[in-house]
Image (cartoon, rainbow, N blue to C red; front, side, top):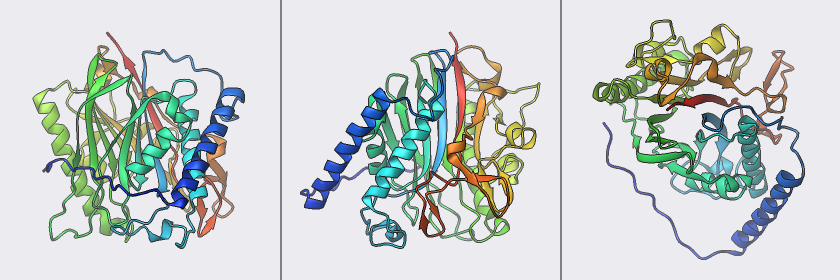
Length: 374
């Protein structure tokens, strides 16, 4: 069950010459970015969206190894340091931040996402740099993040626009496996409850479930366990209030028809008969009918980055609600490259093997548009 909230500790130290230089580079990048944003229409932006200003957009993005270059002695992050195997320099980190800003802005398409959930971020510092040292600074984003026990130090996190979303409470849901299942620590689930446009309460869960590293069959019990744990939390919310508005976003490392999603979590395919206190997977149609994907492993593309909502989000026209047609995968050409081995396209990654290519991520972002009724 949920333990007490983790406290955030800030280490205070005098600025070294390297840190001064880094801040100077950041300042230069920020000024240049503002120039591009103000005077040059970026090629990845299209015309202003016709979406109503009262709508509310939630996005999720697996950033694929957004590490801060400083070495953290408490985690296994050595590969992503300047001296590590990936030669993860401060310049490359800056470029990665700008790429993430570029993706968020492109998904926004004139209406910036009001909530963005992330996974594979190393720490709060990464999110602070993203919202304060890129042109995202003008959109008034704030952060929700807790440090997890993951051995590599990667966490989930969330940013939100303070003028559109007002948090009421937040906490990490710790994943503590039974002794006979695994002793490998993993990342938390982030839970945030808040008001959308001061009109309706929304419960948001940001997920990054255990990977299939070591084998899909062998690791299936881990995802089943996390699914059951998350279901216990969502069930408790809906038992207290059957019409609760709940959104689950994240990298579930399973697809919509896998057991961890359908059985453990209990996320069903939306039908004509919607129950307010049931979970429904809005990503199902995207994969099995539209044949889209968010992640590609060899020649198989599947949707492991999903958006799941409570039935109350689908049947109501009051407060916050959405429809099956309002969930999307952002699959623009600038996020893709040719797949010479397995044909078609594949995500344009930051690294190909050990070679730095300066791309984005091995995942595509997903987003859902919520309506805000009276």
